Amino acid sequence: MSVHLVGGGWNAENDAAVFGPFLAEAAARAAASGRSEPRIAVIAVRDGDGHDHAAKLVSTLAASGEFEPVITALAHGGELELPAVADVDGIVVGGGLTPAYLRAVSPIAGEIRRQVAGGAPYLGFSAGAMIAAERAMIGGWRIGGVEVSPEAGSEDLDEVTIEQGIGLVDVTVDVHAAQWGNLSRLIAATEAGLVDGGLAIDENTVLSVGEGALSVAGAGSVWRVSQADGGVLVGTFGA
Image (tube, rainbow, N blue to C red; front, side):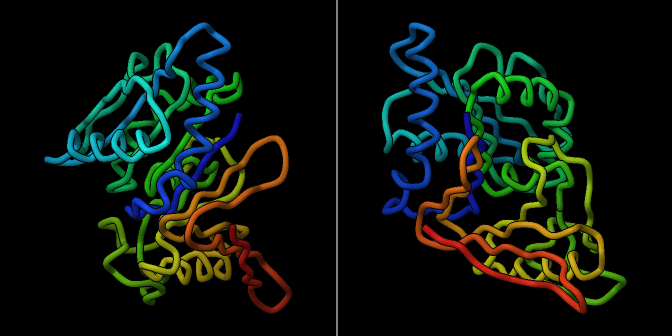
């Protein structure tokens, strides 16, 4: 099954294209096990509005079909336990403060990897996409004290910070690429050698990573950043 990485953003016109492939995979997995509807773990880690964010994710997914949501909403500082993803056909990890999501999900990262390897699709929305990487960029807006991206997207961190993610994909991921100016953060991190390169995903856009070629759907582009002699190469691929 696939890992679906969404760059954030809410636009109903793109919901079916962005979220539909994930739900279709989860439904196929459910049918194979005799369930009429897929059970989807929906995880939100936010202060004060976790249930509202989870409900918004559920509503957005519902545009593509019926399913049974299994919602876990935690405040910042909370940590997930295995029942949050037990007996489900797919896993959705939402958006918000990326360091808080990484802290919450890390205790069950091994179980998430096991389930994805066994055929359960994963969808990461914004922060959920960033932490899916082996080497996860979790925030920051300066490198060596020099501004490299807007402070508004810093995730409450000063220096650009790379941590061990949950290891579903082997490339560093950034989100809200064009909309928040985060593409420049990935470019600067690559040039500084903090990462070998990576992918920055626009809002209302999904990058799906499966057994075949990468695929992109939605309104925007995925920006590919890689190291090159004397600098950095940047290119795009879109839907």
